[in-house]
Amino acid sequence: MDAAAVEARGLVKRFGTLTAVDGIDLSLAPGRIYGLLGPNGSGKTTLIRLLAGLAIPTAGEAIVLGVRMPSASQLSRIGYMTQSDGLYPELTIWENLRFFGALYGITDRPSLEAALETVQLADRAGTPVMELSGGMRRRVSLACALVHRPAVLFLDEPTVGIDPTMRVQFWGHFRQLAAAGATILVSSHVMDEADRCDELVLVRNGKVVDQGTGAEIRERAGTNDLEEAFLRYAERLGGGNGDAPLPSRGSAR
Amino acid sequence: MNATRVRAVIRRIIDQFRHDRRSLALLFLVPIVISGLLGWIMTSQATPTPRVAAVVGDTLLRASVSAALNGAATDGLIVDLGLLDDEQVARTMLRAGDADTVLLMPSGTAASVASGQRPTITLLTLGVDAARDSAAAGTAQKLLAAMFAARGAAIALPLVVHGTIFGKPEPTQLDILGPVFIGFFAYFLVFILTGISFLRERTGGTLERLMATPITRMEIVTGYSIGFGLFAMLQVIVFLVFSLASVTVPAIGPLPSFGLGLGIYNAGSPLLVFAVTLLSALGAVNLAIFLSTFARTEFQIVQFIPLVIVPQAFLAGIFWPIATLPPVLQVIARLLPLTYTIEGLRAIMIRGADLTDTTLQVDVLFLAGVALVFAVMATRTIRREVA
Image (cartoon, rainbow over all chains, first blue to last red):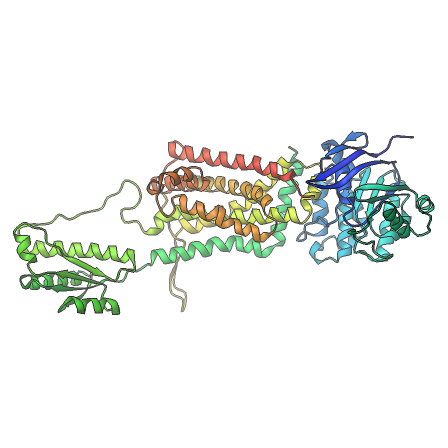
């Protein structure tokens, strides 16, 4: 097996008595899109933060491109799109992009323009972010995460609040980036996005309950419906009470 | 430390202000309104001439008290209400607000003075306004001195002329308070601006994103210090120009002539005043970043004001000289940055101190130290994020 782009080994993160990530092992290969699926509060965001070097694991290790995280040297090779937009609302699209670009040392106009082009906002560059719709803000946020052409992209619920047309375009971008060799981990709790991923990682209560392609997971769970599969895993693990239910198919949040 | 990234933070702060026209306007308007209002009140504070009456039980003294009151009224010191029949009448008048001060001289006053004793003369006021009461007491003393001098014609009382080592001989309240409010408001305003701005960074998810980029914590704090320092600088300039300059705008058409600027007395270098104020403002920037960790909402940042700003206002020697505070509070006052800002500004503006002055050296070093310590503390708080 060739070198994994992103690896987790026995990763644990506790906040007081709460164990948000409970011993996760992962191995993500370059050039593939991984879907991180799980209900709200299952530990998706914490896992991403650990992998992106924004939190220090309680135990275990997170490795990105061969370097143990958190590591300052790896930050410029990682793109991270937060669940909240993480933009300056009073600044224009262009100013936001220019700012985040500069932090990665990207100051040339063509690179910034290319990032805007990717999310098709080149004609709105001068609009203040606060005047944009939620979906457009997600696009700006994505552009800011892409501006330095990272080798690894962590996208935390990137398509929340985005209309179906735009969502298709988003997945188009992701596919292009993966084709160019990027490793992408996309978290979502919308199951109909799952089939767009090369591989799925199902998490629940901070643990990985299954990993594989959509077809493999369906087969193992003995159902054709991913959502159904998820519920069966929940039953097998016992409990399931107190968890936020998965949203029905197609609902955008 | 990477210059591109620090520059990016500074540029972003400037961009934010550029888009937020109202904040930018307030940044300039606030010092003008505050210093204008304060100056207006303090320079044109006309103390009304006290209305003085006397109840003289000693018939020997009636004529001379009456003459003394009359004389003082001619000099414009008082308004002469003449002699009253008895204390009851006097009390009624005071209560009704028809008189400000009444002197009560019992019978036998003249005799006891003559025999070398010290008779008691009562000074009656309403007792609701400490400043006016002490002024009334002063007036009464002058009045009595004049009266007894007139009776014992041989004694000539010396004339007292006030001289000072520093400052103007007859300072207005504004000259003494000037240094204070330049330093205080610059500190206060920068604290609020930075605090709220950095809190938004924490709550808006942008700090999370910043931490995912190669920018270091020190670069963020440096960028913030310079960015907000720049705006603090502009504000201090507005304050200084408005406080130190004094321009009389001539009457135009129906508008009466009016004064612009406060013309506060400044014995020292305006540049030095600027430098000290800026140094203290930098401390405020870093303190605000540090404290924004402990706030979750903008509401809470505003609640830090009574905690951070008000005690400093009380203890820093703005209202009461530090030497008059209880010993424990004096020690605390010596730990507060604003104490040094105000001490420094007073040294420059009233005594004309320059950098060879040891007091000022201590002030400047302390302020620089505070800015540095809080910069380090601010840096420490940045990584400590909520999940």
